Image (cartoon, rainbow, N blue to C red; front, side, top):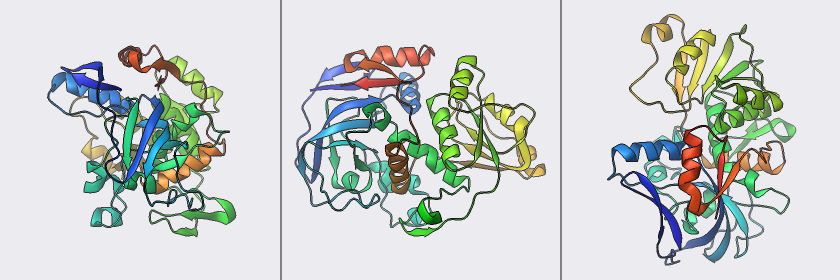
Length: 352
């Protein structure tokens, strides 16, 4: 089968053996995989460190072609009536936590050792992948016929946004004002304060973050130095008001210059959520944080409960980004990466 690898910092599509189902889990034929900003970061890093091991691609939608499991559906979506089976179209996340260590109990699931150790194999940019039973239980969801495959590729990245929004202290209220906590327990939700939030950086993840804030009933604004991205966000009801200061700012830009923008527009006592990496060793000024009583916190990757909520909101059609991606075939992955780096496109989706 075909699979993407990095050799000497460059993408190559190689022929390799199809993964075998030698343990419990499933073999999935990849249908589409979104190109994430983190893939771009990995590629840039590998160019400087060619010996580093990199798994490329994780925003996967595919078809189960072989399965051996006793797992009955995704436990976080309470899908325990129709077991996974060959032929199911599914979307998935690539990491899952142990849910039992102190880090998980404190709500930092993406810092869990299990979370960091597990992954899909060999990579999302492959014709076939293997997922284990932990994936099936925690991160895999059936894609119904009415759900556009392109939209389904956004389940994992949108879950990352949900995680950041929840870490900022906001709550999603579902039916009867109920919500789920990190332990998958249904609890009474508390109404969010009447906050204004600003997303700095309106690439695909910034647009998802903005729409996620709206789904949480937070008044969302967005800023990008690229006028085309600003105009696209406006089509989704996301504007920018330079005369406001904001209760919460979400950093989805990969530029260190965005840090100064955040300090300019954050309210005293406000919260800055860091959801991007930047090149170089840049940080948030100690005295600004101290004298203005600012909170600066990071958010990295989703817990299973975030994936379940992401799946539900996309399934309901409340998050619909169909049509924003430019499609490439797997053989043209290097072109997709290059076009993304040069800002020729907004988002790449790789068809396999």
